[in-house]
Length: 223
Image (cartoon, rainbow, N blue to C red):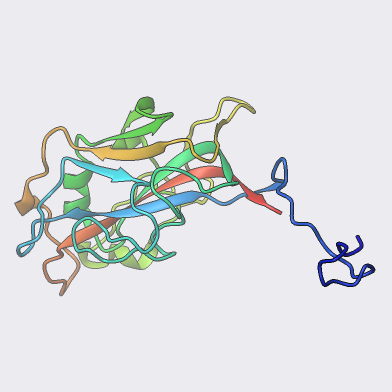
């Protein structure tokens, strides 16, 4: 395109006009959405066991709920609260809930007892409610962690393909940018603080255990 007349630009000078696309072109990647927060044990002056932990509310670099530790890429890949940033989309195939690898059998048993998982989409509508014991962890520590009764409890088989199936055949719920969603872990009866003690050999009192939620599926990313 030639330069505009009387604009101080030679008439044959090439210009590019930056016009917005009518739609974004996306490609599917097998990458989960994930988020992490803390289950407080009541150690020291910090918060005790919660009744609810809500996920996908605190984006990367924001603090976690108990210790205030800033989230990094190890804890979340959400860039804004409760929704995907434009133009990303996500097709949900299933879920994992992963307990901190330092939580021993006693702590894990107390945390899993009577807890339940909920996924909410499109505002406040619950799309899935299921006891936490039905939710696999996927890959976790095995082998050496079973020494001297310091094993990490893990729900389900330790395999990347082990997740709670949410899609029906080829039909998958798609999250589009700007649509609100979250996941919650709920304890109708609060976990007794005294039962959430570490049982790794030599481990001191733990202020909080990390608990992560993975939404398994296809992440639609811009080209």
